[in-house]
Length: 107
Image (cartoon, rainbow, N blue to C red; front, side):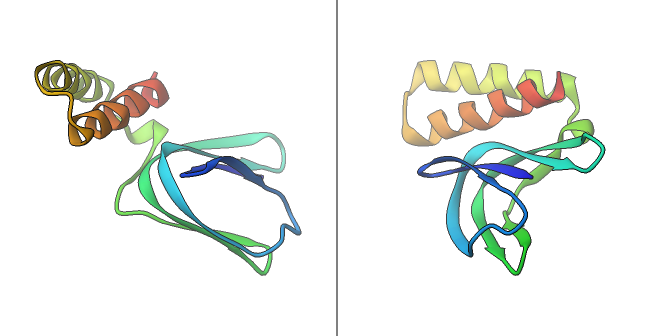
């Protein structure tokens, strides 16, 4: 099973899912494999496609949870929080959401 956050909300794809194409938001993608192996990935937008029993994710930025440096992620979150407090723009909001996602997956 693959669970992803689209711009419309979270969606889960199981074996045999109907063809699908959607835009991804800022969020975690969870990949659950047989035997309960679970992989979490921080995805910062992009697209998801389901076709022929395969899920394909296209994103400019995708980080495996285990590859995220907790100290760097926390520092980036603190900078993003300060930037958003100083100027609450859409760009600063997106940066804060990306940083918060990275910290939550790294923990």
